[in-house]
Image (tube, rainbow, N blue to C red; front, side, top):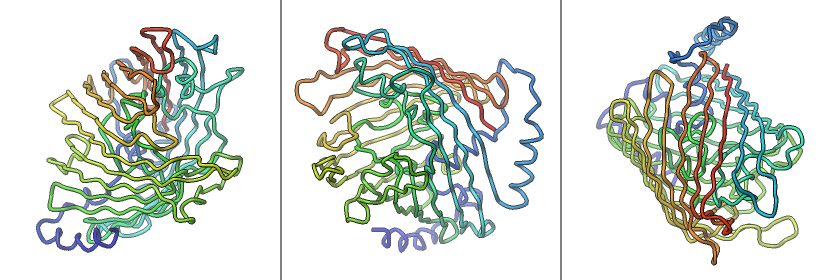
Length: 416
């Protein structure tokens, strides 16, 4: 399949060549390592500005280094407090955690031709604060929601999250990636799906029917088909990094045993110069069964199809997600889901949004749940953003003692 994609690229190139700037963007989604750094470097013009110029020399040096060497780098720290209105068996109702991220992308050659050879890496430290016994992401399960309400805000040791090579081919009409990757950086995207900056609930940011692996060993390829379509495939370890204490863990045990997570996506971009503005994608995936350390089955076979779309109209960003699966896989929390929503850009990078999500749990005997999520991200300076988030869960699948419950969350983020 990878070979077929690459062979198709020169044929597509005969129709029309995208400009070099478009080719440099590659095939990554808006929550990817490099895409996040690019968004963080954009100028902000928020309503409420805290006049801090302390970081101006840092930003100026970053631009100087990038222009001189092709190296882009960034630091982020995001902190989160979450509280649920209900719990199960007197479990803890609140949690707080932080995520430190250091990332870099180095364009080593090919910038002028579009055949960019790029090394990308990211290091994370995810940690729960103080005496809290669970992370904000897992708080959902012990209070009642089937879907995590604070994606990525977990408790995991300091470690290398990604390290991969990305190579553009045929003037940027095609590309390949290989190394330790986040598989979801290349599939099932909409414009407001980054949980570090926008929506937080799983049903709002990614398809809960997918048994999505942790970052791990993987390869992928993408190609333009004509001027408005892309085809992308990813093959990765179905479990990925087990998040042990080894900083250099690559999570490739299942991959080298012949067990894979495989996905293929067709993406339509009516305005390819603004790839996150208007997009419609259909993704099919299959994840193999794999065993745990004791030899028992840790994850069953998972397969299904998802759709993701957003369609920017002025300041409005309507979005739609849906998917079905066989309900298998260790990380899937639904066998069917539908999400509709709307984002609105108030000014510059300030954004508010709302979604309504419905999911059907894969386990028998659990009721379907519906979640209404709203957030408002506003910048108080170029580098600091605050985001209050409220999720109202109706008929929570894991807490049948209540008809509805709420999760109040607030995220603060510093991006340098």
